[in-house]
Amino acid sequence: MASNGLIAIIPVRVGLEDFLRQALNSFGTDIKGKRLTGGLRIEFAQTPSIHFARFALLPDIERGAGRERLLFSTDYDGAQLRHLQEILAQTTNPDAIWGCCEGYKNCLSFVQFIREHTVAPDTYYISFRDESVPRLRSCMALNETLQAWYTRANPSKVLGLLPAVLRFGNLVRKFGNILWFPFDVLIRGVFTAAECVVIGRRFGARNFLQAGKQINATLNRVWWIYPFNLLLNNKYRRVTSPYSQASTNPPSNPTPPGYPPEDAILQNQLTLITDVKPETLPRLRAVLALIDLYGRRLSTPGSLVGISTIHTVRWAIIDGGKRLLMVSNYDGTWENYIDEFAEMILSGLDALWSSAPDFPSAGAQDVAALKEFLRRHQIPANVFYSAYPEASVLNLKENLEFARWYGPLIRYLIGVSQCGRQQF
Image (cartoon, rainbow, N blue to C red; front, side, top):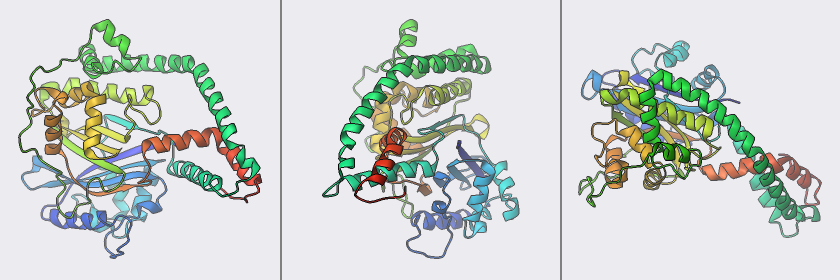
């Protein structure tokens, strides 16, 4: 089933900003409905096609100080029409949210209303493209059930064969991957080369080349990037000064009281909005197109050029090219996430945010200044939902591979074992 994403940015009616903020915060701090207050709710968990969802209030600088826009973002399976219909059906009081937004009439026009305010992402990376929520959950359940069966005091002889079977299966899988590797490289290479030609024509050969050099400068560990850097003598410029551009009193966690807390569960969300210098816009568009290409064509499931903590991430140029929006869902703490970014894709961060007027002069290698920059532009989420909040990208990858290779065999062995029968 195809995976999709939705970003809608909608102006909030004047005077209703605080009401909407409080309503969303009440929902966001009780995302599972344990308090059962009877107020505004969207039963995301009752919609088995939603991976992640969030609400956040963005500043609406174009309409004046104090004005805000509602950001509604989801990652979901299937068609957009069905997704929006499910959202509406699972909302207890739609007018409490959408009635605070300009242009909203009633539930009958909800689908058209959202579509009119939808923003198309310039870059969209999904760790497990085309893996549905039920599929991910079933793979997790299979592994958990196997562990429960196998840790019993007296496992059957059939289940006792599992370690040997799995060792043999791993050898077969590794051998198969080695055989498939050259064909995989050829197929990916052909499609990537074709898309590079399209990107070069669309944004200009100069912007395309500059974007590629800037993104790839610190990615020599990636085998298909190393020849590019070697051929063009592409190197990253390191600062020589030991001093950071960061202030002595950097901003801390910007989440205000009443909002869902950061680092509350294994997963987190990050919403950023930065200004874009007009002269950098053509190159930035080429950068986003190349990163999108890397994510779709060259990344392996669960890893974006070596980063294995990103579930989904989107960048979108908004406001007629004046601003860049980032919407990300990831594992671990905010600090660790940014540290991994700065270590693994240093030049990529420079390529993205050197378009901002206040980006550190030394770039992302000045990690303290980078964190200060990101905190300054971070938008706290009023609502954050995950369909599998305790599962990391690495856990999901392992469960998917296990189920893909051994699922039928495991189900059969457990079914015929003396321990009993279980329906998966």
